Length: 156
Image (tube, rainbow, N blue to C red; front, side, top):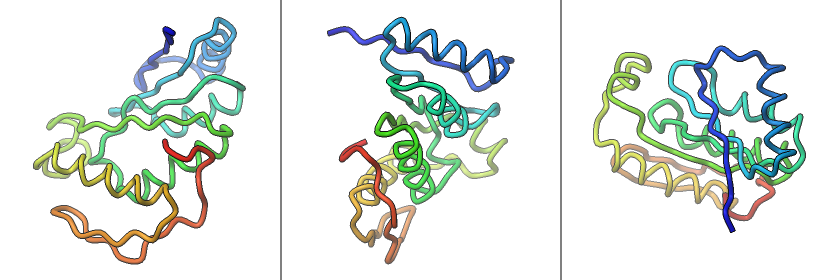
């Protein structure tokens, strides 16, 4: 079965009303997912929450959020919140972004992006499963972190 998605740039000069209208039309036409990425425009989680509040079946995907701009704990909290608000329609897309955005916009060294992404994925999966996260890695050392809320989906 083919599934069609819509990717929406965070830097497009589109009003909220236009974006909601586009998402509602996509849902009516049978689109599967509305993706919103981010670089130096709007943040994906806020846009997707807005879309989720105005649609019923359209999945909501971060496409992508950079791992350098948030901690794994915050990404876990954000995607779990989006999943709850949307009643189980959240999809998490992670990426490294690029050196210019990471270093010049976020002020963080762009060091070992793939290894950092692997740690994020491990931590986020543990956090979303509801277990207490104790983690020792190259980039993060976490102790006693446990989310008090769980997403609707068993696996995001």
